[in-house]
Image (cartoon, rainbow, N blue to C red; front, side, top):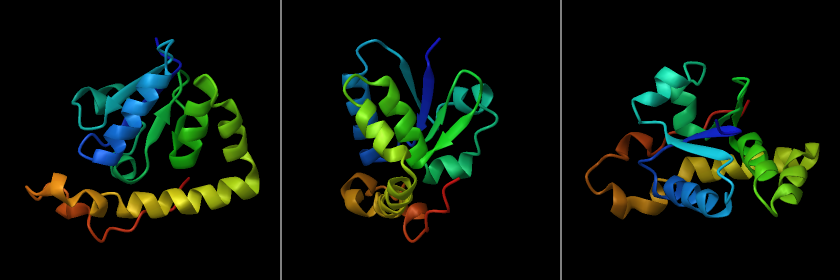
Length: 135
C-alpha cells in the first residue's frame, strides 16, 4: 500500500505533466497517482468530492484524510527525496497563504494554456470557471 494516493485530472496536460514529474522523483513508490476519471477513484475514495478534485488536486493518506491543492503538494514533498524543504516551506502560514493564491490562479488558467490539447472541446466546461476556495 502506498503512503499517499494523489488524484489528479488526467484530462489536463499540466496535471499529467506534474504527475509524471512526481513519478520520476518517487523512486521508492511511496505515492500512487490515480486519474480522478478512473472508475476506481470514486469507489476507492468516496470521501473525495469529485467537483473539488476537478479544481484542486487531492491527496489521500492511508487514514483516509484528504489534502487539497498546496496542502496536497506539501504532503507529496514530504515523501519525495530532496523535496522535504519545499514541503516545510509550503506549510509555513504566510507562505501557505500566498502559495494557495498562486495555486488557485494556476488552477483557474490551466486549460487556457493548453487549448491545442482541448481542440475536441473536452476542456470547454473549465474555461471561465473560477477555482474555489482551498480547504
